[in-house]
Each structure stands twice: as C-alpha cells, then as structure tokens.
Amino acid sequence: MIIGKSSDGIILNGALVTPQTERILLCHDFPQICIGKPKFDTILSWIDINNSLSANMAVDYLLNYGCKHLAFMGGQSGDKIFMDRLKGFQIALQKNNITIPDEFITFNKPDIDTICNSALRLLGHEDRPDGIVCTNSLMVAGTMRAIASLGLAMPDDIALVAFDDYPYTPLLSPKPTVIEIDQFSLGVHAVSHLMRKVKDPATLIQTYTALPRLIKRET
Image (cartoon, rainbow, N blue to C red; front, side, top):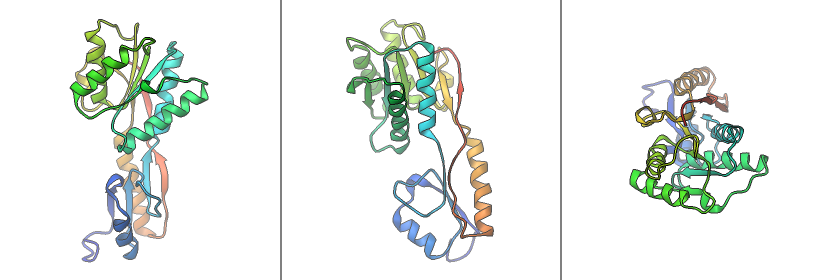
C-alpha cells in the first residue's frame, strides 16, 4: 500500500506497531497516526486516552463517597491499557496517602468465572474492600456476580466504579457507575491529525486526547 501509493496516509492500532513497522513508515516518509501510544519509544505520531487520569477520577469518586479500603480488579500484566489504569490508580492512592494490601490489586484472565472467583477471594479478606475499581466491563460482570453471591448490596456495602460501558455494563443490574471515554471523539481527532500529517509529513504529533467523564449510576 505504501510503495504503490494507493493511499495518502494510514491510521494504526498503536498496540500492534513494532519497530519494524516504524522503520518502514519512516523510510518512506509515509503519513501516519497511531491510536494508542506504541509500547516502545518512538518518533511516530500517536494519540491516546489518558488512562491514568481516568483511574484518578475513579479513586476520587470512591473516596468522596466515603470508601476507606480500595481494591483494583485488573487484567493481565501484558495489557497496556490495564497497566496504565493501574498506574493511575496507584498514583491516586499515593496522592491521598492511602496504602492497600498487595492482594487488593488482582490480575485476571478474561474469563468471567475466573474473575468471579478472584473477586470472591478478594471479598473474603479479613478487612474486605468497600470500594472496587474494575478495569473493564468484563471485570465488572464477574465482580458483581461475586458481590451478589455473598448477599452484599451496592453501593451500601461495596461501591464499584468501572471503566468503559461497552459491551457488558448495559446488561447489568444495578447499573454500574463508569468512567467513559468518548471513542467517537478519539476517531475524529485521529483523522484530523492524519490530515495534518498528509499536508506536512514532518509534523510530529504525540498527545493525549478524548478526556474521560464519570457517569454516575447505581453502584
């Protein structure tokens, strides 16, 4: 596509970009924008969501609600989005001079039964958390199943904040409070930046965009 000049530019998934991809794009001076910061230091252009800020919003919300003991239901350690959100969660705890047990940060495979069992172990802790941040909607579904199985109420016994509405949270009851990212806006910004790169391929764009917003619901 690049050599044949069948297009004027390309939008890439930053998580899939490699140093080899970078060399090809730079060698041909081909206009590009990555959605998501690549996993390595790069001079490619990218835009990304501020996942650290999103996690900070979640922690602030739970603390303002009155929670004292926070936990994080997370994904696998190789997942960049999860790790960025975890970093933001930890920074927010440090900012508020809060320490939590190591086991209050969980790493989970994307399987609802595994997530549920992990949440049950978390909730079985002697000083169980009263506020939980879930890194995505699948974590919410598994965690809420565990909470319901113990007869606990949300948000009275345990408050919960999730990331992302899609695809599971619209199906859940009670309706989860979420930190939502405007994905549509992210796509608009990607194309806008790419058009700038087409006009001037030397332009370097590395920025965070699509600020998060909290949607308060029932958890």
